[in-house]
Length: 92
Figure (spheres, rainbow, N blue to C red):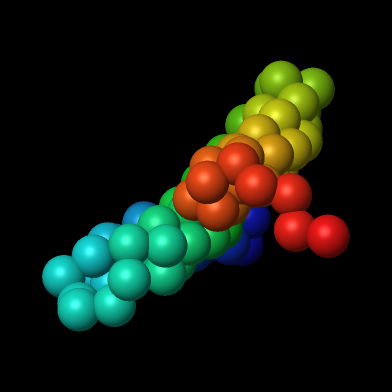
C-alpha cells in the first residue's frame, strides 16, 4: 500500500512539472508564465520528495530538510523576482 502511495506522489509530481511548462507556450506576460512555472515546479518537487519519504523512511532527516529548503528557497526566490520585475522601486 505504501509503494502505491509513494509512486502516486512521484507520478503526481511529474505531472505538476509538465503542467507548469504548458503556460510557457501561451501569450500571457512573462511574469504570469514565471509564476505558474515556479508554483507547479515547487508542488511537483515537494510531491516527489514526499513520495521518496514514503519509499525510503530511513532517510527522513535529509528528505524533510529538502522539503523545508525547497519551500523556503522558492518563496524567497519568488519575492526576489517580483522585486526585480518592479524595477527595484519601493511602492509606498
